[in-house]
Image 1 (cartoon, rainbow, N blue to C red):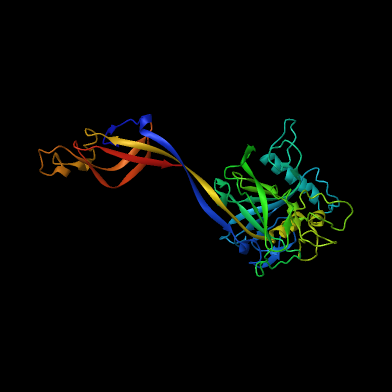
Image 2 (cartoon, rainbow, N blue to C red; image 1 turned 135 degrees about the horizontal axis):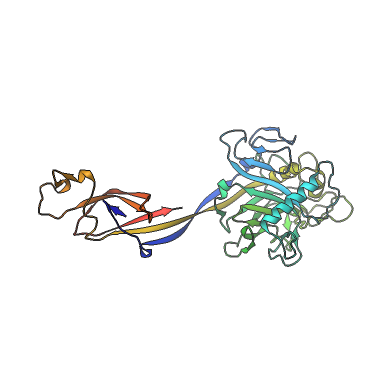
Length: 394
């Protein structure tokens, strides 16, 4: 802190640090997810809403809150699909290269989010998060939320996403909401979360239903996916859309990992139908579709996504103390007039005084680093002492 040509050194006892977490509620409504904007042909040749951007590589799609070509559009999240190397599904189309892409995406995300085991092998997404045994999410959809929304991290225990679970698919959920839904949330993770990820802290996602006749398979409803808080990424098992009494008309048992929802129907395709053109089961949708088509089917069943983000505000607070015998004089050229202190006028016998308006923080080399202004000039004379609290946020 400087006064005129004098400087006062700040010691360790004159400063402290604080950490503040600021939270903001983020609601992603159904109007943003689907059904609001007109459709157009995407880069992958598929017709979808103009706020959903596709790419010719067909590895992911990006969702915006406004038509993506507009300068007003804000990025909301990306969606993609991943398959573990040992996923076990058969019949995936080789004409569009979907399986190779899905395996590569799974491997890339797994490397970043769960890392490698002691043998240098990329771990799979573990259902209980301890990476110690069997039980993995092998067929997943990724939601990569924009940093604009998540800030420094998603607040633990606040994440929730709701899906429509009607047996017969309808692409007009925005105008005819269904009563039957499934809610995926990280309930209880505010204090119960995992820390053994190279990407930071993560939690287990759980499922509950509301309305309709669907019921949940109790053995798997508490392990339907993972949420990585600092990365802002949700890994959701596609098996939540496959019924536990699955009979999709193919030979053998589907390897969807969960087969979570029981729709109380018999025979035929008992999976929750996923497209509005044909009544495909989720397994057959994966086996015969490009990534963009699969993500469209999932997105168009989404009702809402809500969470609180977190902004970490770190501060250093400097206590700039002006004792009774300090900073009572100024070297400002206007301080004197005809060899008299202007602020004293003709009060010759009174002690000198100054009015503090600014605090400057200097480096050890006397380089000005920061300036703080007070709301109004503060009188300083030998009869008083001041402590000015200067906070630097970063």
